[in-house]
Image (cartoon, rainbow, N blue to C red; front, side, top):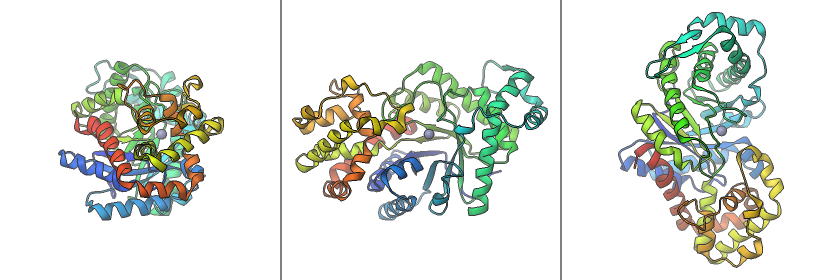
Length: 420
Ligand SMILES: [Zn+2]
């Protein structure tokens, strides 16, 4: 099924809200190469972020191309139209070559009964005792179960097929990487559900190279994983086994791999991901959220002077507009209002106090996850500042870039791809 553009085994999805850090992000991939592991960058920015900031995917393309040229990167790189659907995809078609087909809204909407029946009839291998190499306990299923799963996911997969075919018509076959994402929904998909979904995706003839299920546990933006790490590890390994099986059984692309929409900073499961990927000789795509923007703020705060003033101003405004800022992210942030310092207090902070509270270092008692999450969704405030913010980034380029590269490499790329 795979022809045309191929996503390499290891890839990292990076967000760059203000399109100023592509070079610093690419520098982290170069460091991975120096450590002996090829990790290619995929710049991702969803329609939601473009709408909030008032940017366009073409700006992301320009920034990525410029960084690649400047640093002499000769390996592949991609631009991800993150979480798009038929309503939002159009302006991404030209600049992007990676499309995350978001079908979460269709999950649970029943497909046509005749389509469900046809799916069940076509896939007798999914009914009864389903033995998958490297999964200790075979899955036990029956017709009612497979029908139930098909009823939950078939309409979503058919929707992905529609978006995929629309893209083929506009861009041409093999001219882009396709991912199907199901992470922004209420309940996680189990490994056996993932297998059934992959069978449906193969039926729909979508040559996906990555799939983003919703994993067990909470993946809030910019903070650590909340959940049972042992359960996550077990399911992650079973997902890898299910994918390897589906590639052979259904002829999906050889390089098909999991895409972990991490929301960034899932430090407590990165080790498990690394070990599982090594154990299964699998690839993985780690999609991080726009926490690069927080590194910009950390850099500005660390610079002191007017940089620190801007960081404080962003907090003051974010505090005043908390309701509005958190609304679009309601399902992926947990801010405890009681833990938010008053802006008057923050106004008196030194650079160190500000960066200690913001930087995601769990060993630092001054780290404040509510403060961090509020600022994470507060990029709209910086966007409103316009040139004042962008000029500050440019004036403090070096210290900001250092924070961006160090964070991306030391806290994400190294634990997931290189191993400690
Ligand atoms: Zn996602």
